[in-house]
Image (cartoon, rainbow over all chains, first blue to last red; front, side, top):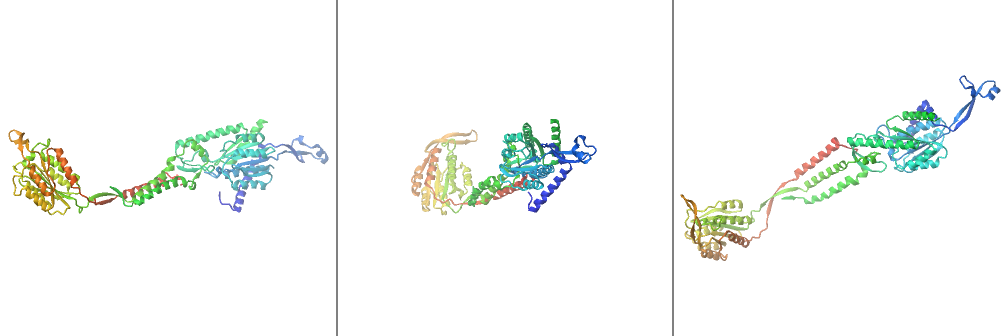
Length: 298
Length: 331
């Protein structure tokens, strides 16, 4: 992480905010909006009839009183609770190509939380390593979104390990109302399945798996002396060795396939965002797909 | 002989295991490492490499080993004896008269058997000077007193029987030997007189020579080889080649005993075969023990340079591997 004086932190958050806002206001927000359903319809306003409006929406009482055709506008009641469960284990402090996974996650959260904001949703945050690091209850407003961003970028976790299971259990306990839960993690953990299933039964869970290139295929970099940031394990590996690279890739893809299958069985949506890829594109295509699914469902 | 001039430096070898442990264990938490999140997968596929973990520590340890050994200054010493250190001066007086051809020490004749035993004797006494006098009708110094045992043994091997000599001048031979020894300042001076005959010629008779020996404090060990009686004798005939004939040979043990008595060595020894001769020489060997401190000078050839080269080569190899061929990231 770069140096962080308060001014720098502010500047950085602002930069992310501006970028996210730009993307959100263009198109993203609509897609976000339409892929999560709200609770019902709610009366919004009465306005003059314009050509093209459905005549069924005309409010006859108002029209009679004012002598002009007026229509009633309804709006979907949303007030979604959007929660981010962010894995802040030490493995997030890793990145070989463009940015650390942590920074990538911050950008994704910025996108999602500003989208939520523009849709009048509440956003909350749960940060987890192998224990709870930070909990922000769901609130509305730009300041809240910025607070979330700051914590995601700069909160120094006290522990290095990963225990996603406990994070999910905690979320299950806290979230009483239906919520949209984004899980931002590399999903390199075990033993979280049961609690994730429980969480997914009650809530709309979307697992956004952020992986670095090096976590998908071994970079060809000669002899490496590496350390696991979570367990502190160390080992030497010849990363230019062909069969090792192949076995690594095979192992990763096997793991990923098993993971995708598992998540599907739990009805958890799964997005894999590579560090190199654009998160906007990935999220957008995910929303589109989700919208289609919802239509088909209906 | 390999020796270390500064053996205390070898204590520094204890550093090597320490450095090994430091590099492979204790330094571990402090080493810079790349973070990598899929170590367990790498372990699963068996990608971890012991070779790379231990290669550079092992190279370091080897380099240190070479350097420490070089510091200890190993050197090859070639020992040379201190010439001033003297033992016993021994002159071998060997009878080469015709009768030494007798074959009763079969398969060798008397001379060859005597020569062989004498050579063994010389080999066993590295600290003594030896001289060689051969005599028949007259006496000749074959070799003056010398530490050069190799040439001495050669000289012995070159002795030949004087076929023309019909008589033996034991007295002359002994006197010649005494003459060789009289200027010697060794603690003990010895003549070993090997003969098989009767002194029947020469200006000096054995007893007189023995008295001369006593005058110079020289001990004489007379050895009579063969026995009185008939023995096989080789006759070389121009027509019939070499054949053996029994001939009568005289051995005057009384005269030899007399010599021994005069010079204070008791009685003369008589050897009728090779084994007996060997025993007699062994006995003389034990009688004439010399005590001396082996003062050996060494010429040292320093051997540290190859070690330094080896260390240098290993260091170069390490640098080459580390920086060019197989750099380990992020070390």
